[in-house]
Length: 175
Image (cartoon, rainbow, N blue to C red; front, side, top):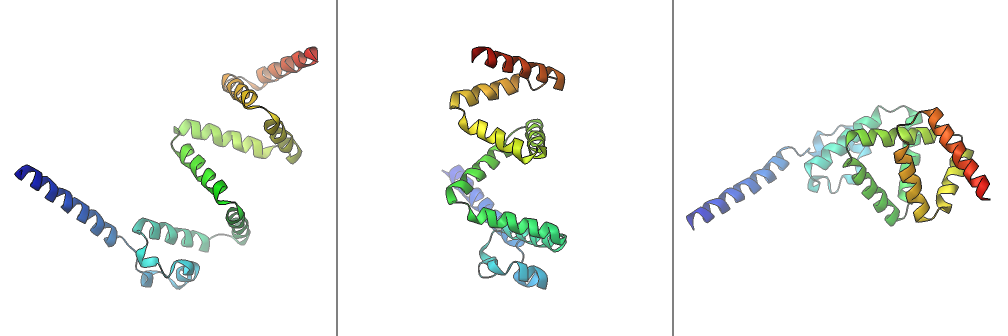
């Protein structure tokens, strides 16, 4: 019984210390610069209730924004607008995909980033063509395409070209 009481007391102290540590790292509104306050004005009313970590992220974002070139700010505004215009379900889906991505091993994250950069480097017409092809595939065809891509990941460009030509030849023979 005494052991249980001591454990409960220790747990209570730990919980209180976590709350106090969070309070100690909070950023008072008055400490923010005038520029930061102006930028973070939408959060002013609830600033004191925000967790310390969120306050720190917001302050860091405000500082980053202050040092962005005008062109980058314009691009960021456009991305923010696009984000706000998305339906809530789409934003939730994006958040879930991002969390899933963050849980991948670093080498897999890097592979996905490189693949995305490759896709972005394609001409817009080619990107549109690939999107349409993907949309027109059945779930089974998509799974097969992903499996094929995984099998061929380590091939050279020349080897991939040869495989592509073989597949095209097979399609022509079937039609």
